[in-house]
Amino acid sequence: MIQYFQDYFGISEEEAKQSIECYSMLGEYSKSKNTYEFEQFQKDTSDSPNKIKFMFVMNPYVKKTIYHQKSYGENY
Image (cartoon, rainbow, N blue to C red):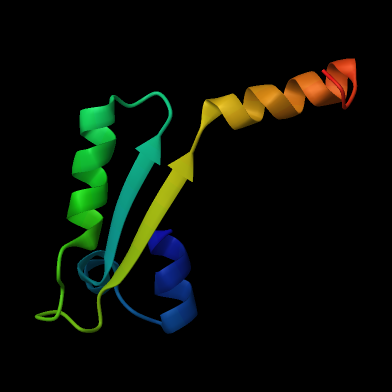
């Protein structure tokens, strides 16, 4: 992702790292870890108005459900 921003905006790696914050909520994380990530994501960044935040969310249950629907049919 850092490389993409460097190329797209024509900025240095250091500038890209200072401009981007990444967070994640994953099904394999504990509830407390996901809560912590979400709280950090919601923190005020008015002191850095040009900062870009990303939240990646992935739930393995959804992936498993889609796999079963493809393998066993829609009514599984």
